[in-house]
Image (cartoon, rainbow, N blue to C red):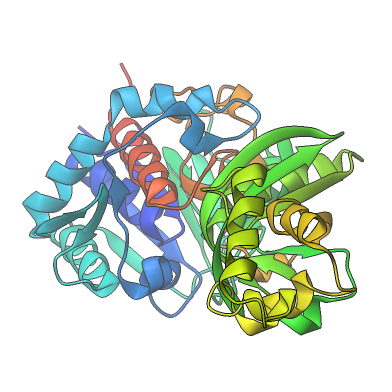
Length: 399
């Protein structure tokens, strides 16, 4: 019997696992990667440590026009199966409060075992090969993937070429272009997990400060999301993980013409009444101090200068500490985003197989699809699960 031929476009996390799972089904697999090496973006994940996944999986961890699509995928290929897969490949996994990392603390370890497994499964890896077009092949339903110098015939094609997010060489919109030419709906790509540019004239005063705070996203005066953790105060606005977590939603609303802002609470463990009493006591303990001096030891100096600008009284200062509102202007560029929201609409993809509903034999995996996760290993889990399903189904002989 003639072996099934699978062409995978993209040699990142989802492309590699898709190629492996297709090859495990007995398919002849060719993987096309436009860079001179595999997994460049994977090497940068988790600051080079590679947060593989997270033990806490919840619907709220994933976004998209249809975020429930991700949960359907995970029901077929779960976080537990991901852990087993990497353990079998030799990655000893350490659990840090639910965040799972390789014991080596090196993303290169993860890439190395994936590449070793792919080569063992006889995946043909073609580097510096950029897919330009996918066209129908013979009447049997096959496809042809065209590059500048060659064309690859395949019974199934997996589009796994990521998104334009990050400054990693090769990050781009090729997957959207290929899918769009085949007739797929593309949800407008926007940055996600990205710093926010805000409106204000004092940011140069606090630039460089890192401080714990609670951040609340507001739209039309209504709170939509709330995160707590270390916030980075920058010359353009705010950054840090709590900011990243709400950034995608903020930018999608801005794109829809809805004004949004964020509220910074620098003392979230206090009510306003408790904070006012706390500040009064600090003043009573050291009556020789000014209001500004009384904040020494409580906040970084640069932040103090912002909070005490225009010499507020204690009531005004309390309100400013608890409710500093910043209108959001925009996000930083896609090059500075960790991931991209938007992509190929999940309305046109089967969640059990990741196969296109409108182009049989075309599959999708990873960030090219309109699913993105919050920080903490969720985007990699999406890459692993969607890639495993796309690969295993693309590699199977059709009945």
